[in-house]
Length: 373
Image (cartoon, rainbow, N blue to C red):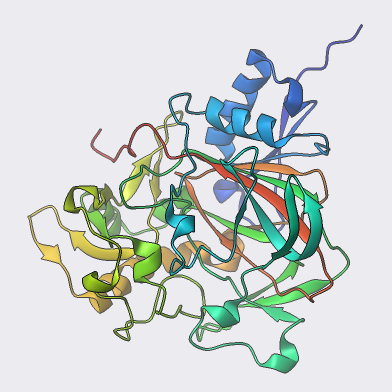
């Protein structure tokens, strides 16, 4: 009997320069029956390539998905956003449904689903830029033109440590259309993308293409995130490139937020170290930032200035030549290094285009490691 050995194959997306390439497919794996040797291949592929695709996993169960996600951090047990989803003012509340028999796994997608994993008669809502962006694509272009909805890290950024890895399982995928993704930020940048793609940008590339002075700045600066950030930002509006928010004074005041425990406010390094390669990723959630702490003790707390600084640092790294847009097939399981890439929902679906995905990430047992560790 021939034993199948897991193998790693770089994706080489068109247009991404070889020196900045990321993403790989791992073949000859059944994720329901993952042995230690196969997991070692998967673990190293994740931290070498940041985004890993395993195709043909239609039989992969929610329980197995949780167990695989937990294997990257055995001490983690709870969903990465904790109770954030239960807060009705949170911008995350409409987008995810919790699987009753596996509460660490969420269902995301689009359209009416009569029954799925113990959930009955649910309406899934694919995030549309019109609900979050200040300026929107004209209605007549809606099915042809799309945006990055919101570039982000999967993380509560209050109380709980950012997850190490997110797993995304494609159960039902509408196919056939492509869309033009426009940045609409004055650069003229745009991309041709598959319908409902997930976009990824490497934090390592984002760091590597900075000037030496900028690299020194991000290595020695820390980011303070807003308390209850997904409630705090709920009335604010996004820039058209999805990389942060307009500063129009629409953020909720402290008295409008759930009770704040000052000890749970997170101040994290701007760069996070890869546990396998030691490389540094510029890893910031641009919509949740509140202050910057500089190495000399200065704190920048003017929100518009904080956002300008961070946008200037991150924007080169989401230029079209550095973005990987995954073309989903049913049965695709994608794992990504949540401490080394930022990602964004993309796409505008018609109501009858049904999309069902399962997502899992777990609040980490340890905080990110910065440049000096």
